[in-house]
Image (tube, rainbow, N blue to C red):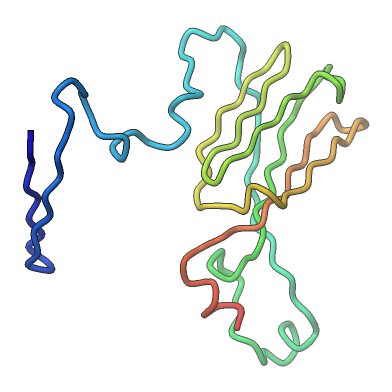
Length: 149
């Protein structure tokens, strides 16, 4: 089967040959959907997403850079997950570009992140006194070279 796609914005057409036995294209399936498990009885833990930016005195007092307090000027995303009665050895954490997958014997969290992150260079630490897992991820957005020039 051959399908022709036409873009009215660019005026170009694209021809794709597809296998007749496939139901959908792999591009149509959202990233992270392979982790979705609606039959898993574990409850979802409470979590909070924070955005963090690095500022110096030239940013705070003089306004010499283009940074402002919005999330567009933040470099890192911090996810704080409450995991009561959990040991560090019980935590399984998998991070992809747009998905965070956390599993413990009692809890399960599949979180689709608000923007892409650098999945290879993140940091995670477990604060045992507060029973919170803190995951810090560097965001990789398309136009970061403008904000952080």
